[in-house]
Length: 261
Image (tube, rainbow, N blue to C red; front, side, top):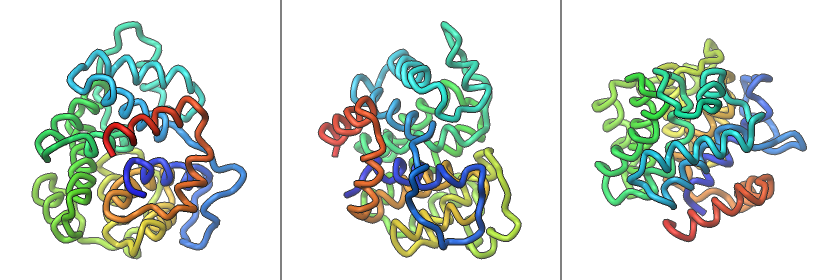
């Protein structure tokens, strides 16, 4: 199974390690405390926008607000919570990785890399209009789109390095010892992409992302979104993830799958 389930599974698996970091790949993928967080909620808000009207900024903002306010305790940052409370919200210059964690549906809807980039920038700019926030969303969506159409890892690495000036020459083993919690796009998106590039399969990619420590659920969602386009998500991981969605989120997931995948 391929698709946005990669981001959702990464989020849920990483949810127990967001504030309880580990530096090992040896951990249980799912526990009784594994839950969806803001990464999944916002990914499915983007999916809902794309199902309704991918050309409309109004529909995009409407769905981010509806989903955000429906799940107020999903783990949003303070600035995004303030944005949700505004009647006519304006972007607030964020450079954080929230733009990258939610972007993957854009790459599955698009018919070209250019369309994927346009949708990704639009999805980010309503909140994360800082250049680094947009860059993180674009780099992630480009990687997902290229993986989706069959590009190999070296093609994806080269594209992201050249276009976005991210250093992808490091390895997970080199990053892990000194890596710490970092919610910036600049400090988490390249590392998440490397977790995919170093991964042997979907599960290994997620284990890489969680093992870095730091913002584990978002790192695993970003890495998982790319890995979920490059490899099939194993059935047991997909099932355990889907099982943890409520009916509202599950229905959006099913609608998106049926319409686009």
